[in-house]
Image 1 (tube, one colour):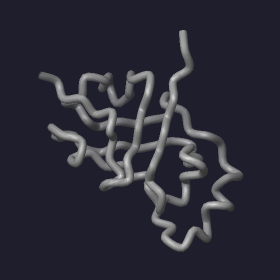
Image 2: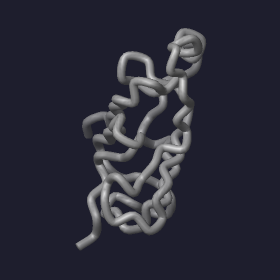
Image 3: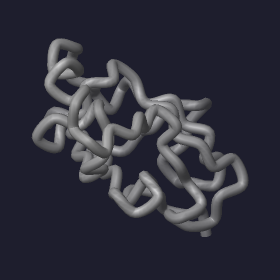
Image 4: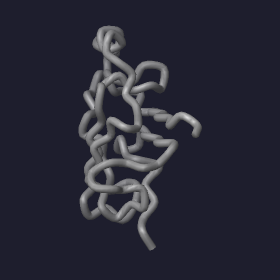
Length: 103
C-alpha cells in the first residue's frame, strides 16, 4: 500500500516548510461544507513576514493520519478522520482541495 501524502500550498502559514506541514496535526473545519471554499484549516498560523517558519521546521512532519476533520459531507470523512490517500491544502482560504462532496 502506498504512503499517504500531504501537500500544503498555504504560503503564509508558519507550519508550511517546502509544502510540508510541520504542525504535528491539522484541524479541518467545515461541518456543513458542500464545497472546497467552505472548508478551513484552523491549524493555519499566519506568518506573513516568514519569521517563524524556520522555527517551526523543528517540529515533526504532519501526516494525513493526523488530520482531524469535521467535513461530514466529504466522501473521505470517517468519524473525524480523513481517509484520502492524498490530501492537498490550498492557499485560497487555507481550504482542503481534496474535499469531495457526497453526492
